[in-house]
Length: 114
Length: 112
Image (cartoon, rainbow over all chains, first blue to last red; front, side, top):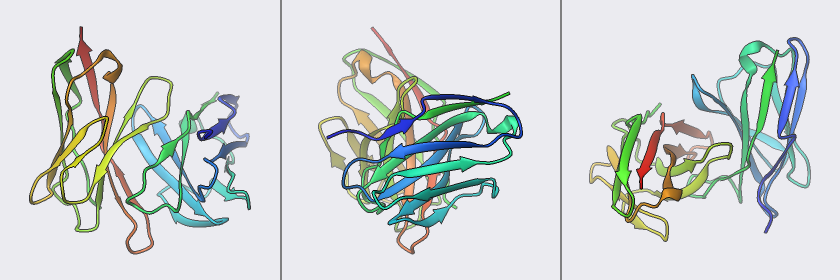
């Protein structure tokens, strides 16, 4: 079974631009969640999608958004990039997103904002 | 929201057991305790999880205190491949809203 796939692996953008990151979950998994990882703040929950609906959201500004498609693939968008958005963005999938399920993480997209 | 506290770093000798602690004194009754580990340039990898009872799997054991305010991840025989950052995470979505609290992580160094 293929794991969680995130593309691209690396991205370099400049301030003010926008970026779209992609996440393909494990086949059969309907819950996809996104996280931001920085050296200073550690791992922080961004949002979770289930059956094309955003079900949960962390404490991030509205510049961070996402969506999920009918095949459960998910995209995350960051508009008007700031230097502080430089981070490793991780997605994880699980069958239904219940708290007693394992999360399967992708390798992440390393975003650098110049 | 519940918080978790972990030591920043720990060292252990190869082939010896390792006990990684996590404090979560404000844990709620519906919080699951998860442990993940992360190698450089990789996403976190699931290790183990539990609610109230101790748990064992092929990778590790999870010992949960009776009052659930702390837990310990036990690696029975550390190998060099166990060197990673270990995260203790609380998950609760019993009321529909996901509460996901990450610890700061413990960097485990294995000494050959």
